[in-house]
Image 1 (cartoon, helix red, strand yellow):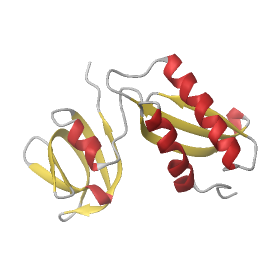
Image 2 (cartoon, helix red, strand yellow; image 1 turned 135 degrees about the horizontal axis):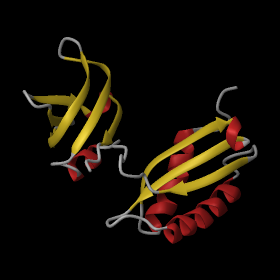
Image 3 (cartoon, one colour; image 1 turned 90 degrees about the vertical axis):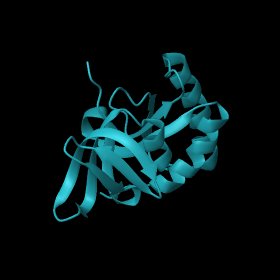
Image 4 (cartoon, one colour; image 1 turned 180 degrees about the vertical axis):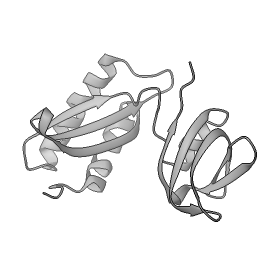
Amino acid sequence: MSKPVDTQKLIQLSEPVIAGQGYELVDLEFKNEPQAAGWVLRVFIDKEGGVSLEDCASVSRELSAVLDVEDAITIPYSLEVSSPGLNRPLRKEADFARFVGKKAKIRTRHPVGETRRNFSGTLVGVDSGKVKIDVGDQVCEVPVDDVEKANLVYEF
């Protein structure tokens, strides 16, 4: 079964609600999860200094009301609001810029250079739509638009 909702529309509805409460929408996913008894809308939020359980509950209340009014999801679903965790996903150019100096993993949709799609190292900058990541023996430039998946790597 295909997704019964437009994820982009959910992002457009969610971002202003979340930003209006002083948080950043980090990620949003809508998945059918049989172990969770059906469809789940998972929303990840963040703010400087991290988010608390109360923050998640507050965003959940506001977002739930807006989604109900807009009738954005017409099938039964569960809403989960949480922090992105230690291995925070990186999506936008601003995310990469914010975490310069931190360790990250990046996977691209297409090979960069001849054959490389996976990069693991330290973020060293962002310039003209390209993320610069120091992978140890060189600094690679990865187009932000070609990033399939990227996240911080927490070091203990």
